[in-house]
Amino acid sequence: MMFQGRLLFIFMSLLLGASSVTYSSTCSRTPADSTLIVYPAPEEVRDSMASPLYELHVRKPGGAWQEVFVYQVMVDLDNPQQSAMAYFDLEGAAELRVTVKTGSAKTASIRPTADSISFRLVNNELYFRLQGPSKLSIEFDGDIFCNLHLFANKIETAIPDPGDPDVIYFGPGLHQPGKDPLTPYPIPSGKTVYIAGGAVVRATFTCENAKNVRLIGRGIIDQSRYGLKIAHSDSVFVGGVILLNTVSYGIFGGQSNDLTVEDLKSISSAKYSDGIDLMSCNNVQVRDVFLRNSDDCIAIYGHRWDYFGPARNYSVSNAVLWADVAHPIHIGIHGNPGGTIDTISQLRFNDIDILEHDEDSKQFQGCMAISAGDQVFVSDVVFEDVRVEDFEEGQLINLRVVKSGAFNTVPGTGIKDILFKNITYWGDRASASVIQGYDSERLVRHVTFENVCISGKLVSKADSSTLIVGPFADNIRFQPLEK
Image (cartoon, rainbow, N blue to C red; front, side):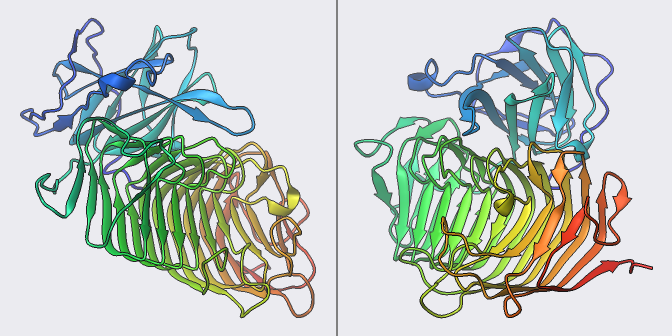
C-alpha cells in the first residue's frame, strides 16, 4: 500500500548491547545511501509529554543506535487510555528496537497485517527492519490501546525559507501563539505555515475566505480545537504534520474547493474528534494518511451549518484508518432538509487498511458506510482494494437511506451506483452488512460486489449471516454472478 517497499525479513544478528546516541536533527548517509533524521522533543514538553510505555531506538543498517523521543497520547473515547507515538524521517533502510518499559511482553504484532513485517521479540525488546517510510501500529500481547504509533516519514525535499515574507515558520520548540490552544490562528491567502520537525504548536489554525494556503512540515499540532479549519476557501494543501489530542475535527472543511491532504497523521480521543470532516467541498484528494480517531476517520457530507452545496470528485488513497468510535468512512448523513437536494458523487476510495471500527448503534454501523439523510443523494462511489482487520463491533458495509432524529429531520433521496471491488475482511466479530432503502421513492440501487471476501469466502449472494438486503433495494449484483 502506501509503504515504499515491504518490510524485509529480520536481520540475522542484532547488537543487543549497542549503545544509543544522543538526539540529532542532522542527517547522514551510509554506504547503502540511507538517510535518517531524528528530531529532539522540545525541552518544555519532555517531561509532560513523555510516554512511560516504550523506548525507541533507530539506526541506519550497521550504524549506531539513536534514541527517538516517544510521546504520550490519549486514545479511545469509550475508555480513554495512554498510548504512544514516535516519528522520524527516513529514506532507504533502517533497523529499529522498541523496548517495553512496563510489564513483560509475551507476544507482539505490527500492523497493518498486510505489510507482513517480520520481527524478533527478546526480553521485552522488539527488533525489526524498515525499507522505507511507513505508518505502523506496534502492539504487545494483543493490546490495541496501549500501543506505539510509529511514523517513519519521507525526507522533506522543499523546506521553505524562514525569511520568506509569505512563510509563517515554527521552528523546533514549543509554541503557543494565542492565549490558549483553542484560540484561532488565521492563515491569510498566499501564506505557507511551516511546522518544523521537533516543534509542538498549540494553536487552532483557520483558513477562511482564503486561497492558495499551505500547512506543512514534520512537527506536531497539539491540543487544538481543529488542526485546520478550512471555510469558503480554495486551493489549500495540508502535508506532513501530526495532529494530537484535538478537541474536535482534525481537518474541518466547509464549502471549499481544491483541497489536498497528504501524509497527515492524526490521533484523537475526544467526543466528535473526527479525523477529516468535509461539508459541501469539491475536488478533494486525501492520500498517504494515518487516522486514529474517536469518531469518524473520514466523513463526507452535504450542507451543514454555514456550508451549502454538493460534494463531488473525491479521491482517498493509501490510507490507514482506525475508528475507536464510529466509522472509518462515513458518507451522506447531513444535507439540506429544507432546500435543494445535495448530491454527493464521484467518490473513489482505493488502497485502504482499516484497523478498527467500534459502533454500538446498529443504524450507524459500517466500516464503509453511506447513510443518506436530509435529502442527500449519493451516487458513483467506488471502494477498491480495501483490507479490513477484525474489529470491536459493527458491520463491514452499511448502505441505507435514513431519517434519524439525532442527525437529520427528513430522509435522504437515494443511493445509486456503488461498487465494492477487491474487499477483504479477516475476522469473526462483524455483524451482517445491510443494504436498505427508505420507501419506494427513496431506493438503494445498482450496487455491485466484485471479489468481496469475508474470512476467505467470496460473497456471492445475500444471506442472513453476511449480507442482508432489506426492502427498497434494487439491482444488487455479485461478480461472479450468482449461479
